[in-house]
Picture (cartoon, rainbow, N blue to C red):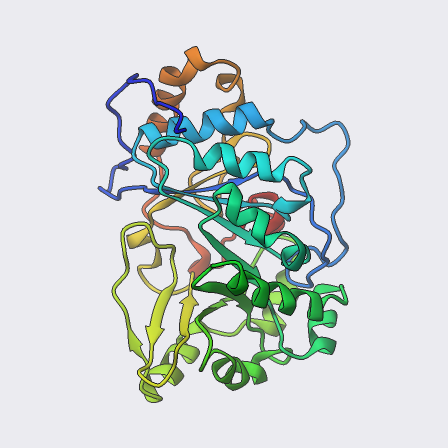
Length: 336
């Protein structure tokens, strides 16, 4: 049964530059059990005396408010969202909010083989899983975890339980795993996988790492075009990936290139952190507190007004291309 939305206001998620926001990335935990060298090389470090993560009821109220303002897709992120013991209940609650047509999940895949059938039953409509290398030794080197075989079994299991496509994320890095580009292409030739290469992004804690390993997505785009891949049209609720298809391949390739000129022109997504702050951009600002308006159903109208007002201050673009990564120390704190 779907949860009805109260008619508490007419504000839609449209910013001052007439960009429409149909997509919310909702972090439900900062915790992660992987130690990826581009994100949390020292592992998850809990902060003392910090607020707890959003509760189930608070998460549901976030979803209702955004759905009432036009959001159609919610992606559950982390950290690693499936570390939460109430993950299935959260997914089911979000999936039952009226107006939400897609509930996506981004995961490191460590529980995928065991739990993906339960995710599907709870209402998760699509799964993104991180695989930064097809070489188990390199996978271990990048993630700090020796779980390559389990993650690959999880992808196979996702198809077994009825997912028709799985999106696989990889941060392709110079002098680490960039030599695997052609291997990844071969891997998706006969599999319905959208292989998504995410350009390494600079954060406050990772400046020297970025300098050593950043690989421009434009280089990969030119390789694809030279091999006959064709750029596809983006749907309204799609994420930022430029998706390429090829007549000889069952799979697809997606490129996420935040340093590309005009990357922000098609922005359609907002973020809420695991502790209840609205972030208008992955980079740049401290966030707008929402949690005080997540304590009762009667606050929904005021909550929507705060979200709408905050959105009017969203910048036209980030400043990554100018070397400004804002205040973000690492991406796990906001769901990537």
